[in-house]
Length: 129
Image (cartoon, rainbow, N blue to C red; front, side):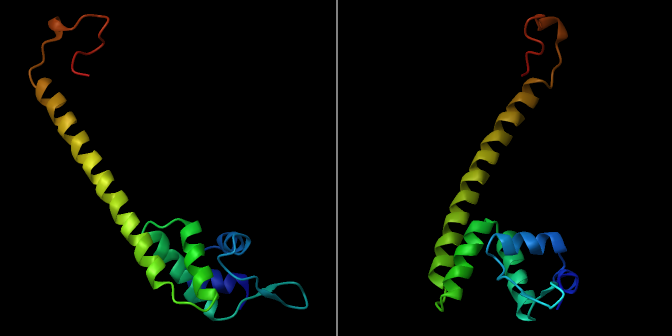
């Protein structure tokens, strides 16, 4: 299938497909005698996998690692589990940081609940921040 057909079938753009090919995520397509890319039908599944990996928060480099393992004929399950464990740890840390930020902002808002402009000095801009 041509690049436009693959883009439509996979819900992406031809530019993205060229980028994936340049980055080694998508194998180089065969070329027609006229020089057009001619992808095999399994390219749709590979692009779907790339999109699922991105949706899980994996980087394209991590997705490429998984694809490389599969392309070498091995099951990447253990590597995927390690990546997902790492991603979960990162998310837990981000959530903890967001909870702490929310508590700080709540305290600031509570302090600002009683507006007392006369207590602000001009060099403070606003005493609540």
